[in-house]
Length: 68
Picture 1 (tube, rainbow, N blue to C red):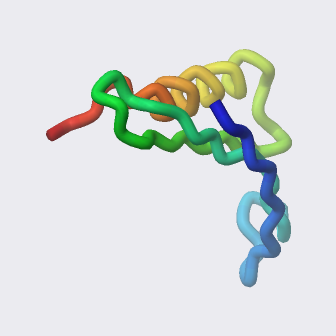
Picture 2 (picture 1 turned 60 degrees about the horizontal axis):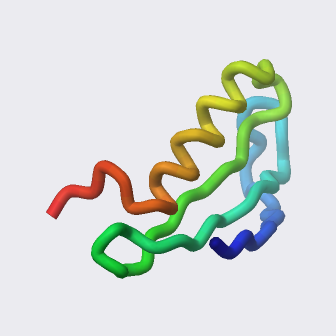
């Protein structure tokens, strides 16, 4: 897997923030195609909620649950 950190300025304040940061996750689906996930929880998320976002990002980067 490949991890690409990012940081972007928001043109409009959203949930009290003007900048988002996170990581794009590049992986491979079971069929060998590229798959991507994104993880950028909001600062007010609890560790439990942020961990669910992480699990979803990793699932997406593995191509799990893809529709064809």
